[in-house]
Length: 164
Image 1 (cartoon, rainbow, N blue to C red):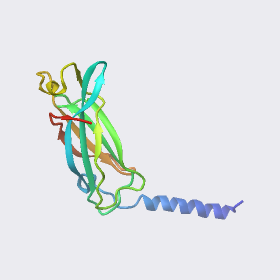
Image 2: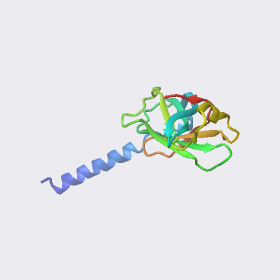
Image 3: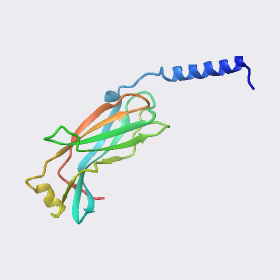
Image 4: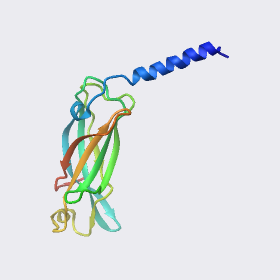
């Protein structure tokens, strides 16, 4: 069994490592993370209870424009109808796991889709032309490590069907 002095040394060393790890430079993701190659539209989610279903979707890549690796990079998407401030749907993904996204690196194409959407017996293209159709937008936010969520972009969902 280690001596009390050895246990205190190990404990102090661990505390020092945690404090040192938390003292690294923070990255403002609004400036240090670039959203690239954005594509939006209405994803054909197939048939639901005999009706066609379309859900808003966004695909994009992210580039780490900061000088440091962004560990545990996560992205959240909030989908809203353009005439309503309430959340209509959401999606979440891990863009870079524990290895992080290295400085200057770009993610592969990432896609987030809402679970909420439109259903109809009309053909999908006709759904987009329906007089009751309301456009949507998506707000992307990101965070890395234990940092705060930061909005990195707002995008209009294009009136186009995206096929699987």
